Amino acid sequence: MSFDFDNTNIKKNVFKGFFGIEKESLRVDERGYLSHTRHPFVNNPNIDRDFCENQVEIVTDVCDSIQSVYNRLTELHNTVIKTLDRLETGRELLWPFSSPPYIKGENDVPIANFGGILKGKEIYRKYLAEKYGKKKMLFSGIHFNFSFDDNLLAIGFQKSDQDSFRKYKDSIYLELAKKLTKYSWLIVFLTAASPIMDSSFFRESSIGNDIITPYSSARCSEIGYWNKFIPVFKYDNIESYTDSIRRYVDNGLLKSFSELYYPLRLKPRGENSLENLRQTGVNHIELRMLDLNPLSPVGIKIEDINFIHFLIIYLMSFDAGDFLDSEQIKAIINTKCAAKYDINTLIDFGGKKLTVKDSALTVLKNMENFFLKLGQADAVKCIKYQMTKITDKNKRYAETIRNDFGKNYVINGLELSMAYADKYCREAALNV
Image (cartoon, rainbow, N blue to C red; front, side, top):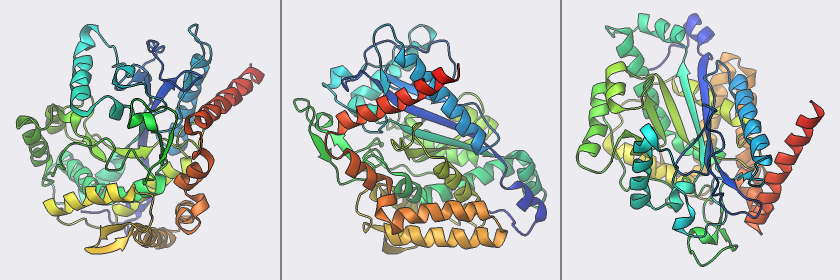
């Protein structure tokens, strides 16, 4: 299933959509250790915690353009910076990397303290800590949420053989989920930004020794945050999809839908549960494979958000076909392989073993040709920006981070955090 780009109304509406960003970042003290103060944003619904008490989660509002969601992310990020700069307990900083700073041990990671009617969230996090270990929970990243404009979907529905708009809408997102899972390796390859770790992640008695990993994204690599098995799903309809996830819960491999650590999720409006997804259908798709990028003050470059949107549009120009269990497993293996630092790592691309570098260039050139035919100069410019990461190694985020932070990773990371915070606080003071 795809969009008909020969249809004038499709072409006119396909670039519209709704966007949201969730950004996780660790709070640290000025020495590079994890904060042990309480979450200081209890009255702000857009600033929450994720796994641990010191893991700030910024959740933007739903916006109708990438520029507006980026502006909202920046606004919320700066609110966090300003608050942490003025804490009575002492200044704190937002750690700019996906991989954590110094860790004194498992007991150094405070599980988020929700309490009250939210006590269940805390109990669930204790279950995760026992199953995966607290250290892995410190990996932080960005989730990108997207939904098509319903006006666009309504045009497609009129030409479809579906007997209800709800079924058509679900089928479009199921199709997109297949395609994005197949191409999740590409997003990881182009946005990876966590090649370095502190030795304390691996050995509790070792703090302050830099580990240059064999990965461009440790978070998305084989040592990152994954389920202990590779799940496979049925994409025939939303019922078969949710049933295929339910069986992992029923057989004890997953505690709940929320424990599905996968590059993307289909999500309903409101409560994020399998039951709600099955009953009300898909509201949006969530991409979960983005590293925090320390080369941006807010953790992500707008060029990369734009690229993901253009990738989504491109993927909807052709049919995905079947997505066999074996292909789903290969897709996850590809994603982990793309997180390796060596750009000549082989992946399964179109049934052939090709390097991730050559595979990425092939996709980007195909995308460039597609958007040239549509006359979309902004998209072509964005794709060329991604190409430079492959043709010029100094444009690759992981390469820059290795060069700039390869020695004294935590110390240099702290200096960067302070520089970002000081710059914002100075600019805010001038604007008062």
